[in-house]
Figure: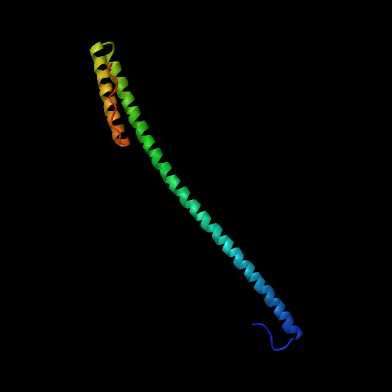
Amino acid sequence: MRCRLHHSKTCVLLDCRLDRIEDGLTAALASTAAILTLLQQFERKLDTMANEMDSLIASVARNKELIGSTITLLNGLNDRIKAAGTDAAKLAAITADLDDQDKTLAAAEAVIENTPAAEPPTT
């Protein structure tokens, strides 16, 4: 409360001090509002980064699974080729299995992409 009853030196000094305090509080309030705005922006960026991190973790997990499946497939194929040796019938059976798997994969990809599967070329 400002001293308005009389204008003594004490009242003038109190008025000056109160003005400074009020100016300081106004500046502090403005700074606090600016800090709050920055914190809100930071929180939004953190949320975005967390979502991106979740997507990245899911992608890495899918890739690890796909790599594991690919390694299993290639090891199995390698074993079958070694077992077939130079036997033309066994090698033809492996080729036929691979062709069937190509068709299955093409059909699965078409379903995923919601497009009709293209017929693989006949050899």
